[in-house]
Length: 79
Image 1 (cartoon, rainbow, N blue to C red):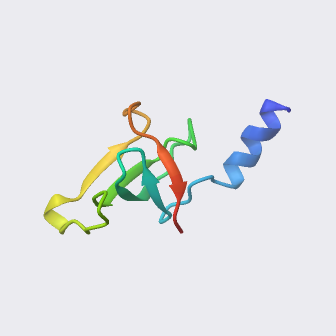
Image 2: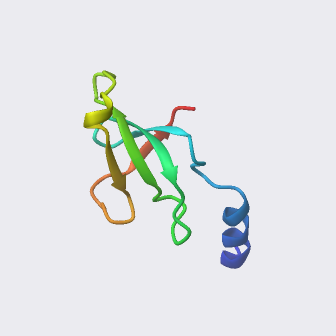
């Protein structure tokens, strides 16, 4: 597989587009807030629900930059 071709493809087609809902390794639900141009598989997320699927109120929302948080990863896309 040509790495340059893959990078060019990922510049056009993002694996986790902004607005996509994802489940993360903590069991929580998050929304993709910002792309990471260096690693499209490690976007910035906003966690919106706990592992019981209870939505957080706006005061409890938190952001996770997966580029800086190696212990958290996306498990699956929900939307």
